[in-house]
Length: 258
Picture (cartoon, one colour):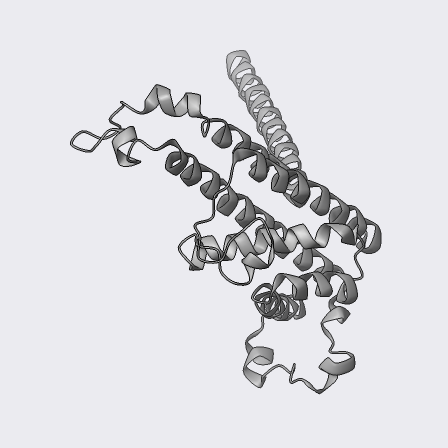
């Protein structure tokens, strides 16, 4: 009898310990989740981290790095690194710097998308057409209204539509939206170089890295010539984006209590 009570007491104590352990794990898990969410909610910090990753990529664009690896064959049966680039350092360098620009711009574009989304979620009334937009059709269909599982879901769909419309516009139009529609503030003297970065990205993506007439309006580029970027130029644009995005983020947090 005594033994049976002892075993019950032992089992109860064991279960209690297990429960304490499980609850502790849940608390720690919740803490970690909250920390992750806090980091993910800081979209500017996410951008900075990813831009910093590109510093290492740009570091191997040097002549010294090229000399060290040019005889290496990365894949059996293929040419060496040097042969792939016709043993021309500038071709090698440009592949890395342009890749860094495209990646960096993609990170920047993702930041702008997330920023606009956060602002619109905080104040969905911004979606209402105003001024010249008042005559535009921004109504929702019966299907959208009926199929939406909640008011919040419907707002999310409208925001997604707004984002698609905005992010396909030119950079000057996006900047105008950030300023006039969202009411964000930053040093507008940064705008010309932000627009140039956008033009470089567009030429690299859609014009085979050849400067078009639009980009050639900047004296650093010649229409019809291949775009050549040093690591220094890419770092310049990286610092520019850091400054611009930081000012946008600070303004958004103050205006929308993000």
